Length: 238
Image (cartoon, rainbow, N blue to C red; front, side, top):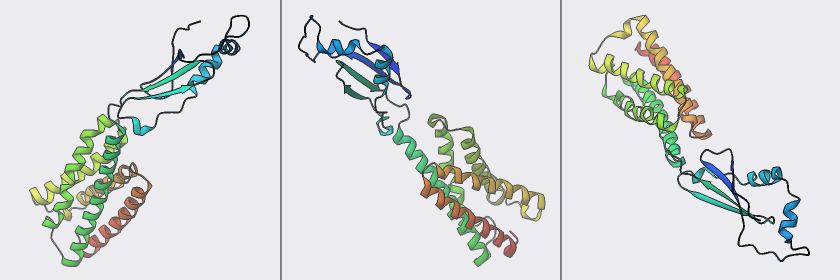
């Protein structure tokens, strides 16, 4: 007796489960003209069949880039097909974007440490070329913001990256583009320090998307950068 294909949804977007009769399986008939499989199937309720069909292994996240079919046979004469449709972004692209964010965060911390240390040791003025690597991190930050909508990033991610990018742009305009002596004005210093460290702290969250090792490295470099920033302020007044 043929049955109409049934569809069930499991907890993965773009995944569907179908139960179809296994036409390749042959079971010898028993007394009364009924097959053994049909006799066993008579004791199975529709709820039981639905639960059995849904107890299939979840697709691995690494298969998000293509179509995958998983087949699971059973003694009830049915074959369960799981079809995973292509992910529009792909796990590979998302992981690479997370890795880029972590690398950019560490580059920002390291370049800031170099600038603060150079000011303490060599008494370098603001706008020196030693700070150019820090300014160049604005470009990968712009890439992160550009790719954020397609990667489905939350609002917090935009705030974290946006604050860091804003602090770099402000520093470029004040020290390199116009050469404004803003460090003699207390409210300007306080405003920039708040913006700068808000962005620096937000980069810890960006780095944490790449894994625990990146998070630990980001936290350690952030603390070192914060200490060196206040040391160079006390020594040089910048």
